Length: 119
Image (cartoon, rainbow, N blue to C red; front, side, top):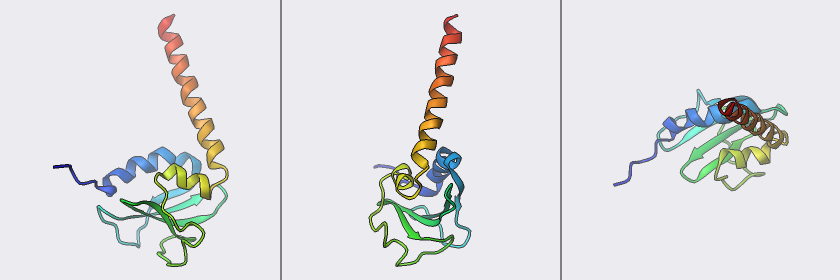
């Protein structure tokens, strides 16, 4: 029997993975959290605020402000995104560049470490 996914446990890693590219990413203190449904407050580098709902279906914009679950909030993004990166590519124009720069720095650090080992 497959172990049930617990989104609350997974969200900490997710936050650590993308927080460098955002002004704010944190769990909502107001909206209800559960192992199957998580609400995140996100502020992009462009200072746009969103409430994101994470379920087994993916990441969905539910409001264009913090701590809200507005039925009209997802009008611009009605379909859930499979990954947080896919969502951020759509809501934050600077995300792709910031992510690329971070990846480049990690690869350069890895290359330097390998070069040092080979000396």
